[in-house]
Amino acid sequence: MSNTPASAEEFMALAGRIAASDARISGLQAGLLAAASLDIAHDSRSFSRLLGVEHALVIRELTGLEDLGLIEITHRQARTLRSHFRLAS
Image (tube, rainbow, N blue to C red):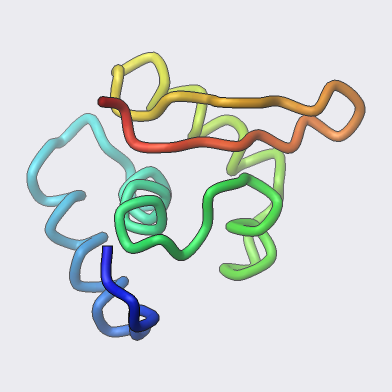
């Protein structure tokens, strides 16, 4: 991970490469993977707010990434469903 924050261009470029690399990955899922990789967001609520996407959609896409074995959910808050995640090792 870099000590300098990723630019929007870096984020979009990485998300595009991820989406193009695997047809099973949606654009939103590619964004989640890019955010985790670039250390932009590691929880569903932060990602949702940063990108202006409904939290419920982010939760659904995280579940899909978890099913694919690409993301690990490290903590899930029962009341809000905020999910903390990282790239699968």
